[in-house]
Image 1 (cartoon, rainbow, N blue to C red):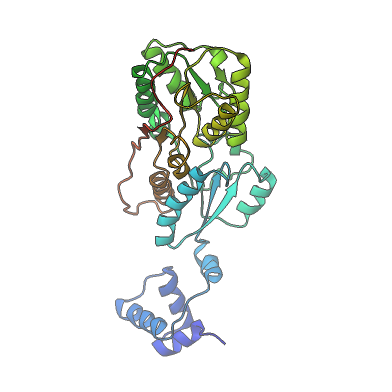
Image 2: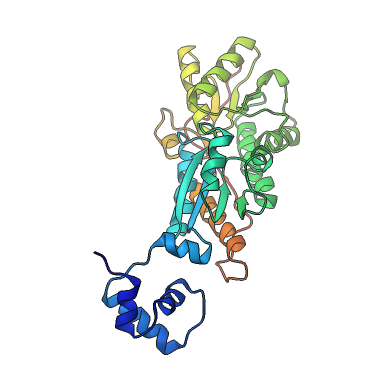
Length: 328
């Protein structure tokens, strides 16, 4: 039989209730009593039941992170950033994929008891209104972080396209372009207008919300079938860019000799494609740190935490997939 709270109480010369007060932090005791209890717990190698502690403190020390897809390394990196902070703070992180879990299933999972929820799957709460409890502490990419996150990098990318002689750049959206939170699309349009480049809607391939390799392959196929001239392509993420690469290769369209291509997110695999993929590096691990600290601010109001970086910025990374424009 394992060590119990009563064993610690006997060794420390206090009641079992006092042991609970000390270990759960639910009531102040004298420094001398606290020291005796902690010393006894350490000597006996006592680890209190997290379930029992949760009942006493009304905390589960568990949080959930909602991601779009577990197959996208971008979300894995965000999860890593969240986990780094959560582990130091004693929290267990449950990861839920919104693309594979119906709202009812997620509702059931969250109802089991979560101290807070991180939404890494979208920049607004609209699609989660049906199952999230309004009173639950939540953190998500919002405000200035969401609005300006990619903007500078998108402008740097378009500027590079321009300097390389490109004037007609296609966009593989993945997401519906009428979504007001599709900031990459809106930033891309603004950048095209700034450099007085064509914003031909025939070059803009709308999406249904899926942004994996297959979506990129299909979007590139649709673009090719439209038979409109273009020399550059911007894909909403690296997975779509990789899928598009395959379709262009099948068609005999060379990268970067015939067209230039840029993805977004900066997943590790983008460094190992042939040619290496230009991308917008979004620092997802740092973003995960930010989201976890943002959640801690809401779960533990008044606690002094590291200063949050309010202006996380993506960066344009030029690689071999972009080159001088060829007339088509």
